[in-house]
Length: 300
Image (cartoon, rainbow, N blue to C red):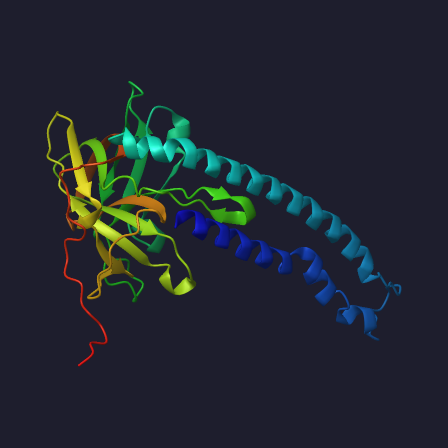
């Protein structure tokens, strides 16, 4: 199923990219009003620049861009075929765990984006740094629930860290295929404050941009590391920050991003040290979905 989705996405975006290229925009907008306008600003000479000159320049740029994107698409297809022949079978037959993100250098930290209520006028702060032993990352900051005095915002006090989506050929987002595993697996060391894990599936249209699967974890405080296993069946579906009555199972082969959020309404400092984030195949876990699925349009 993943291969079929991948090919359909490629064909659709190739066609979309073709019609939205600078060449077609120039042809459509080239004969603008300046070409036919009879008005001339005093003190200036009459100048008429043929729009076909711009067409020629943009055409060359468009051809070069298409060549570049086709090269990326070729590499993507080759890597996908190699992944089918090797990694997929190896993960299914041999691997019980797989590391997705680890924190060993600055490049690993650059794969994540930090955000807080400071974007809406709040006072919370969040930072990430590499531990001095370069074997983990420390996510820390200060949570502040003070509501901005803008007359609109009613709630405040959150900090978040989200993985950067990887962009592939024709400016598409690379999707993760976790279908050979059934649990998220991470090694952390917290301070006793709860965190929410957010998994974002692929967005087919703009109306689904706020769709997220969530689950809460409660790392204990103290000096000891803790390994946390969260089955995919435990993630519940929410949209625009609200848990939905209609729940749906997560599609593990169409994952876009993963993130962490703290918003426990408690002012003060927080800290979460992360060793790695990975996947686990737990053969003892057979649950498909932990929440009730409502039947719609029941036939009498």
